[in-house]
Length: 99
Image 1: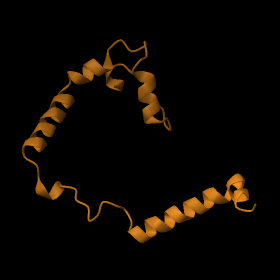
Image 2 (image 1 turned 90 degrees about the horizontal axis):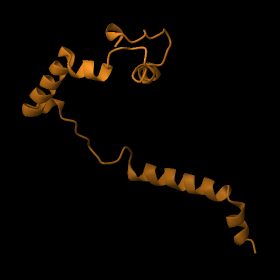
Image 3 (image 1 turned 180 degrees about the horizontal axis):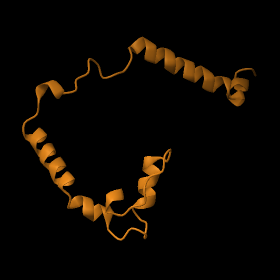
Image 4 (image 1 turned 180 degrees about the vertical axis):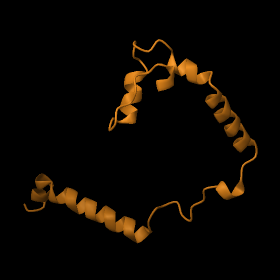
């Protein structure tokens, strides 16, 4: 983007904020989105994606042992802990049982 007329990114600047400030800016005479869509980098990327879609490598397939990140016992313990905290912080609920 800097090569196409955008102001340079400063050291320590958040790249996402920089992109958001550069894209709608009027000081850049070139439409950066249009320039990227017509660039060789974009064409190479599209070709790489098409190649990977048509001929996927089986070793790159992502597979998980389980649907969940932790066992059922750990999930239940976390849920019980969260519910205990919610009830502890809710005095009106607790007073209902003291009558």
